Length: 340
Image (cartoon, rainbow, N blue to C red; front, side, top):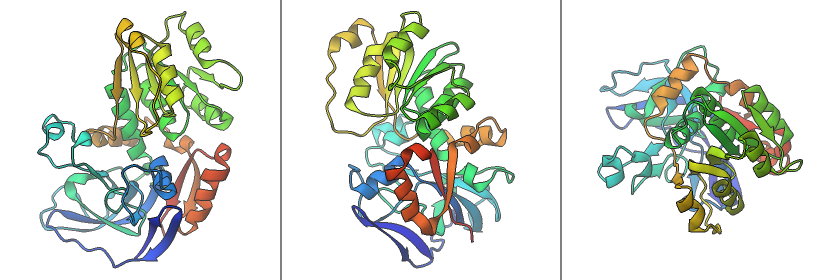
């Protein structure tokens, strides 16, 4: 079978690998049909991921058709359309016993620490496989995993009906966060330099869109909120300065969410956090969100079709990476197609 492998930083190849087989009685063998390219995949390719191990078959946003099941599999059947949960946790550490396996002390992620879904076939245990409706196109279903990240962030942020939610960054994750925050009753403000993505944001329900090249976003947020500031601020750009801006603009008793992996240091005084009694929270992967997001997909309550801008054959991975690196203004989400 063929797989997309990052051998080392900046070296990516389509390689031939032995066909995967079911090894455990609870395993499911999946023919991969589509997989989204995440920013973390690009970081692994660039060599800037702090956690990746090489060589690595990347990809964690994968969906496909079940073609074989182990003898102990009971809920998944041949022919089911499924999405795969990418995280692997120990079940024994403090985080796992606190129902936060996404923060497991020995966490492994498919496509990062172990091989992922950019290959023609994939094996996963039944507990990591979730069925979705047959009428959902593969390229749209590849967005299920990103929406679980958004579900997690908005849950951690405790988005409430009527909250002003300021999302810094309208990339694919920022846009999924926008939709989830709207579902939870938030009044959503989103900023980005990319006009195409801001147009998508408006289509999927943004109440206010801001382009920092045309305005001062923090001043605009204050105007929108009558000087209060945003009740929830989500930094989906993940730079030191955007984290600093998030602390500055968030209202009293507000929540600041960060999901970046940068080692660069932000300059933040304690005063704002203490004086406003802010909750500053990280959000990593997701905790038990797949069932909820799959149900939202099944009920057609989300808009993945508006976020998927490019569908590219996996054999043209170089073309996809070229678009991401050199023409980001022209794309939103790229999904690789693995169908014959």
